[in-house]
Image (cartoon, rainbow, N blue to C red; front, side, top):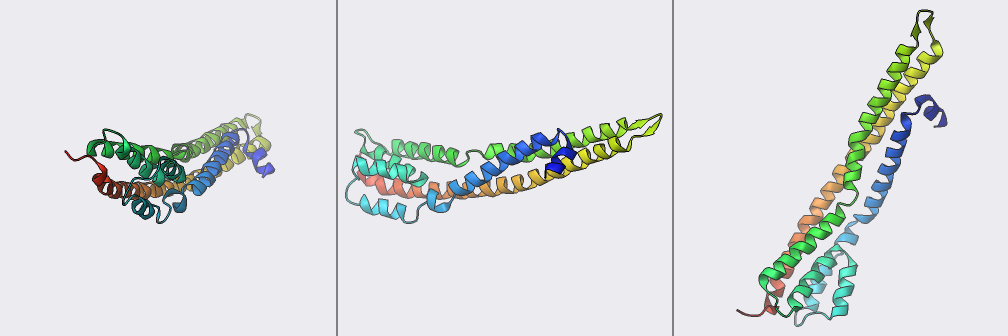
Length: 206
């Protein structure tokens, strides 16, 4: 690895930085976007059962909010109907706002991963251009300098290869994470609708 870095020259350092960022984001998102952490099984059913006859106590709602993104959406609905002047419109708005906030949190760092996927091939191309410049610089009236020629070829090839090695997994994981976030978004919306229907009985009759 050290030999490759030395052979690739200075253009490889931005690519190494990109690879570190991509790996950090991938491992962080793999841990954060686990289904059990986002949508705990049976949490919605338990919340509906607990609130079948009366609203949960404030401390229970606070605990629910800290449980997971789904819990935070459900807690926003309970808090909305507990207000003195609760309304169906207000309940819907509170659920939508809580859902948008949680989706925004689920998308955390994904733009950074997309940026790495887009920038890595360009940085690899930059290394290729630098290598080509060195190759042309090896030509002189006295002949070709083999050392400079070999170094220029190394710079061009190593940077191109590493750029693709960083970009392809980054793009694959970005698409994978976006797909998971989209699936979670739909399920959060469905849970919010079920809670909205369930809490209508707690709203004052007009």
